[in-house]
Image 1 (cartoon, rainbow, N blue to C red):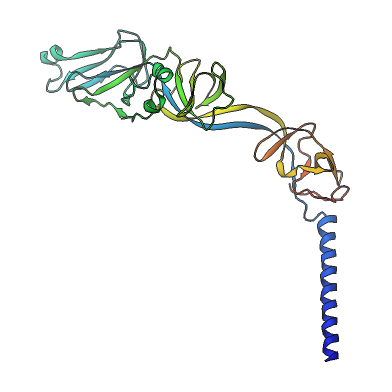
Image 2: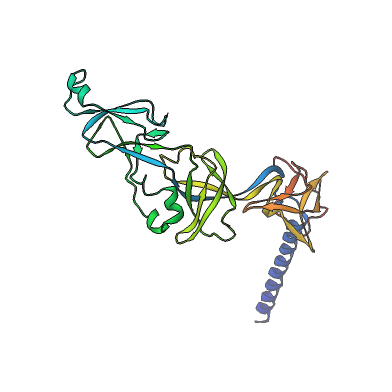
Length: 311
């Protein structure tokens, strides 16, 4: 019995010694060796502050309907601008043979009632979602209207739209759906990216139901007549350009915020000033682009000799 007890004691102290020695080696390895340090190079770049928002556009639009069932001969290309009074198309009644007296007697021209761009596509909302209605009517009911998109072909039935004229000399307006309107002020401008266009739009109206704002652009927005509802990008804060590092590289040592950088084979802590940041990167003041930065910071790195390769 005494011998077995001594064996158990030996086993206990043996295992405990192995654990302590292993832990010591692991502590030394993780804190005083460079093998598990990860580096990335600081890079020049830009921190942007953008958010996608749904937009519903309104222009001055005049739909044109066919007075009778007919075939349509359009004058010009889709999206072409016509002056007021110019012929947009010719309506030919069904059953009239081309080149006959009957044809010339019954055909009817479509004249542009106002100057603007002619489009074959309509959605039935041309006289409902207008610039005036966006600023004066119940937005919840207005924006709840369903579009019925149609693109006219060579033949149409009586009462069907053959297209619409859009006045592209009047600024486009839009309702922007947002999760919050806090900080937005009527009369101020917000920066928006619509397709390839970047513009400042003036806030005309704020709404809590639905949540968002009505804005007026400085001019007609290309594409707003054929795609009434689309996502646009709201630049809610000015971008910041400079030298970027991953946010994981930031480390607080004492009361100083900084990064561990590699210089001449040794890791050093450098206090930094963060100019801007997003979810993944921080823009740092007075940091050299291309310098290796530790992205797995921890205590004990100051003065550590490290070999930086293939980063």
